[in-house]
Image (cartoon, rainbow, N blue to C red; front, side, top):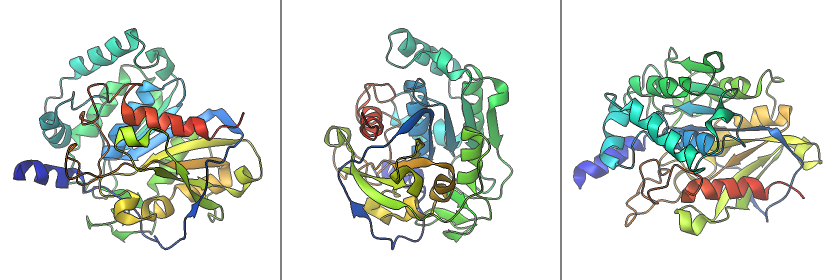
Length: 330
């Protein structure tokens, strides 16, 4: 049990942000004019694995994914031992079995048709100072995606001096430190780099003057998630302009239970959202010290919510999809 807990602790050296002093407004779910061609997802560590699951399961919805310190779809194959082993430490991940699994799920419509992925954009990141996830793991994610996505649409960044966490320009702890809120001031804008890779050329980032709201997460109780997600609403979207959506997934120990709004306020997404007309949805997973054993609030990428966790019927995948759907007006 101690080894399992230590493994979860390592898995949880994940992220958040600083600047958690902004008051969060609580509201019923607002609706917006959403451009369906501008919906993407990203995440850090356990959030990266969930981002990959969302992307593959709902490739008709998402046009791209950014994975920071994460590996290929279905990497753990429903086994925590594999998740805490080669999916973090590198080694044989059984890439053929991962591809066979996703093909089987597509054949039974448990994930969207894999042909949808061909023109998508994928941005992968591994910090040179990362001692939690081995560099071979994001490389395996690239290998997996190359079976479905055009090679020119896949970017792997592995030359930045950054630890296991969310690299920012100047928000968070020292770049060489791994500690809460797991935002690292490394002089590197990971949020900006991935958003430009996924959305295409963007206007320069600006001050985030919009609102950070708390909105319901439909189906949260059955998905081991918190009741509410955070949502950044740029002023243009609040005024009724058509906007895209980016889903940003925190890592272990980085939800509002652990760091308040630090990740949502400081990771760097909102400044780009403000100047480029897209909402940023920050779904929130719940921690648990009993079944399921998830004391650090990690996303389900090994199967604690059920065998179908990586498909459209997976509890957390479905809840996040329902939250996105709830934002769209009639």
